[in-house]
Amino acid sequence: MHGLAAQGPLSVSRLVSLLQELVEDNFVEVLVEGELSNFSRPASGHLYLTLKDAEAQLRGVMFRSQARRLKFQPDNGMQVICRGRISVYRSRGELQLIIESIEPSGVGGLQLAFEQLKRRLAQEGLFAEARKRSLPAFPRRIGVVTSATGAAIRDILNILGRRSVGVEVLVRPVRVQGEGAEEEIAAGIADLNRCGVDVMIVGRGGGSLEDLWAFNEEVVARAVHASACPVISAVGHETDWTICDFVADLRAPTPSAAAELVVRNRRELESHLDQLALRLAGQMRGRIQLLRERVTGLSRRLIPPQQQLQLQRSRFDHLQQRLYRSVASGLQMARQRLELSSARLDALSPLHTLARGYSIVFKHPGQTVVRHAADVGPGDKLRVRLAEGVLTVAVEESEP
Image 1: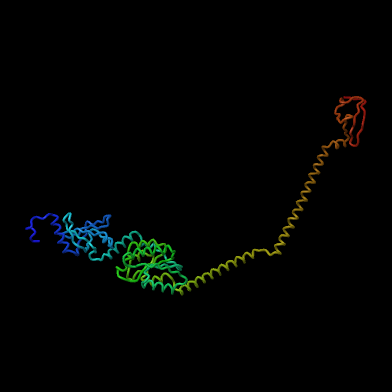
Image 2: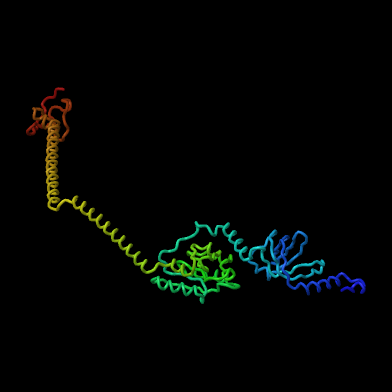
């Protein structure tokens, strides 16, 4: 290196290549602490940033394959520790840090990611108490999302089998830690919802923050929030809190506690049934007493058959008498009208006039009434109608 000047001038690319070899051979893995600035994440998925302190700054890049493993969201102004290797960006002749991992200074990346996601989901309302549902009193079908080989599933099945009667338990085995575990857990929740379970337990046994991390992933939180049935979160021990706990309808400190919460034991069930039987019996007695009182009241209002018959007979006799009186009265009135009409007819009848000494004279033959003396002459024959009998006469003389 000290003799490079003696070899004559170097091209820029040659000098940059020598610097690149020198840097990359001697700074294979470094930890760099500084403040994030110029942070960006374009559509490519790579992260671009600048690390700086009061006296210097260094460009850095984190490629997509490593960036997708980040649990927290980096941001400008954040103090971080980056692990990576130093390289030279040939086109600009600049040093840059090829970053393998990023951790926040003073607090773990997982803890920061936890706080960031918790804050964001809380702002969306996923933790709101108003949306949390009560557990069904007597579920007929219970779903369990957990590992098929862990202690959690053994504890849950043991307690459910001991405490429940006639309950169907559907287990959806999933990986509860490691890469891809969060996707399996979310899919398991969706599968059990399609099976129509009444309530669901989602959880696992205890472990470190890293072990429990799948239950802090957003995809699991979204699946719990979208569940059609109430979800009990039972992750780790009592002191372990996950995002899943905050979103779930109920948090149980352990998987065993979740199983105890979801079903009542047989003694509680028998006691509850006894109480229901007592309430039902009391309601039936009250109903029967009410109906008995109504029947008694109605029976008092009923008239005995003999009395009812006598009443109907009296009513019939009364109606019969009214009918007789009405008919008699009608006949009397008709008789009176008939007599009056007869008297009027008699008064108007020609026979009545004849009875008083008058007569009616007709030409003979014929029935022409003679009203004037001038209507006949000597020798005409006439018929004279008297009150009793008829005379045939001849006219000897006519005096008008």
